[in-house]
Length: 266
Image (cartoon, rainbow, N blue to C red):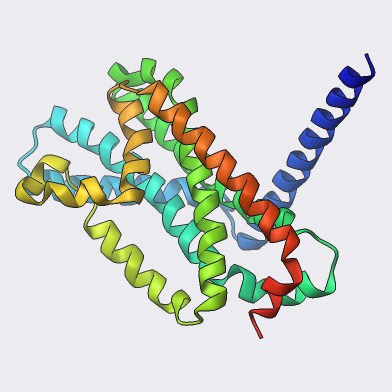
């Protein structure tokens, strides 16, 4: 009975901590859009407008019919929304420890809590953008609505991948100061080499680029689950467990070397 109570207490404590990280991430979002009229609505609006414009342009280039344009909008909007999350994780992570060095050295906050705060900030942007796109798709492409229920596991894998990006990009950025300046170039190259604006079939002999493109593989895992309803649950579960184990070891290393990591920034 005592063990059950202890487990229940630990679980409730974990939920409370996650709730706090979510609130802190929301405060970061509020600060970002302070004094704007639309606030967080811009996250959804920018993706919808950009996807609509690119859909019209590239749809005309590909010679799409109206039905093709509707399907292409779904493909494009989901791709851009998920890519924005990856690009934000890379950009934020590359500068995170450098910009937070004083806070790490002069406060008792754990590195885990600082990383999770930024992670939930990224998550909120993704959820706002993704929810708005799924609502639009609900009205224009009702054939795939049933696939929404298969989104949970692939999205969980995608989020763990993004948290790992934030952490490891921050460590690299701490050791290599030029890394933060290289990241925009890296993200641009990966974006252009990924079937986000165009179907993978357009790559022809260059299809291997998508196969070795790790960020795209995680992006397509979520997008495909929505558009086709095809999910390899065993592979997703295996990748998710592996990612969580890696996270546990990483957080353990960060806490043991907290001060040392901050001093890397000197």
